Image (tube, rainbow, N blue to C red; front, side, top):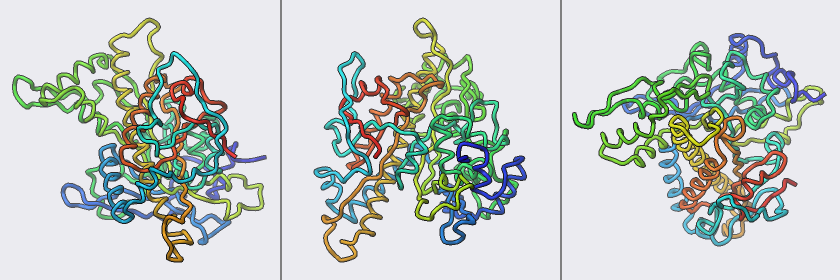
Length: 478
């Protein structure tokens, strides 16, 4: 029996069973080796901004360390600045190459176009993927997330998660419940988390505390007792956004705005969003913030969006080949790495049966800000991933080693797999999701970097999204 669908996978990967939280954390802490990148805080003190954890698997030893991936929690604003800097550096190093890709895009990896997914409909269609940025090649694809992780080395996956970067079926679950229970949730997020279990165990048990707070300085390595998420100590990717929303403003007596409680509009428990009754006043509150700052509500929405954070995981080993201990041993050639971005939408109650009310208007307003930020952050990180992939191809290409022109390289793009964050039981409307995808594709297209963007559907392309994006071809995994 294959153990990747049962509880034995944890022992197959790590060499011991997942038991109580503190015992499991201790064994993982002993097994992992940690590496970090540091930056200076505003006070000049160093802090960890990226960390990865690696360990030896008995099948490979030191020949091939299993990587949890480089973890970080960048904001949309930080990703915008970093991506723009990377694009400029790439163009300076390889002038004209990105422009040539706009005329002749690189090859797509491992899929065959089988049909054109377009249909006449009363559903408003999107301009995403049209001539606004033809070098951003968008498509629909059908597949199971675990299989896609196995099929596409170096791919980039958007993962539907909670705001703690973990996968909980309800807010009653906590990190102390471990990760083995993920096998019983057959949705997209847990499938992606199971595919890269070294990173998933790290986020649950050993997540670096500096990644919770960008102002925390870390001069020395932190010990076991400081690490990991627990019921009362969890990552909240909405923290910076919420601080901006509730902190109050006093530019002048006439337009002063008081500070309100951090959970005045909502609270987050185990990564799940819980609206408060005052969420119905959110639209008016944003107008008051704008007045106090001398700006517009649109500027305030942008300020909120820019403060949203995502959990980025770069270069994580796909551990699925290790999950079945009944096999003689996974082949080293079967192991590869992918990158992932863990993000969430607001978990909402069903919409009101008749029209809209103030509370629903408030959650719609905030939901659309979150979705816009989520998809923009994902594609910005995807741009960075693509640039690194192109750079690596240039270094590895035989033509370059032989001193010939870059024009002879058979360039390929790593696929960026999007999911419908907030769909299904989270009750985010499809129009909000499609609009956020459109906005993100348009925004990153202006950077001039070729991208292979694929919206994943589980069993078949959902008719609604086929109608929203009629110019997107359907691509089938081969």
